[in-house]
Image 1 (cartoon, rainbow, N blue to C red):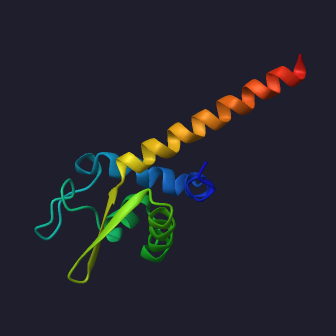
Image 2: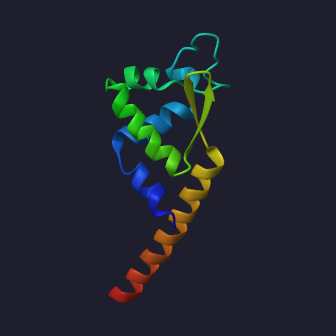
Length: 111
């Protein structure tokens, strides 16, 4: 189980960011010739959506990138963010497996 990834999603703002990045065209408008669905989303747009500072978004994005849940690409001076769907799926499956085993062990202990 990936503790770093679990810590990354243990924050309401980061969970919202992951949700917004799941379907970026539903939450963000394309910007300066970049297609949010293809290229990714700027932290400025995420900050606006969450009504928090760009600095806070930068910290949240760093945490998500470090956990491997979000990918970042640099285009000129811009950083564009996209979800890593495969990585998120892997983390969720591993977590469900571990929690399921833990729950079964707890049930056995109670009986």
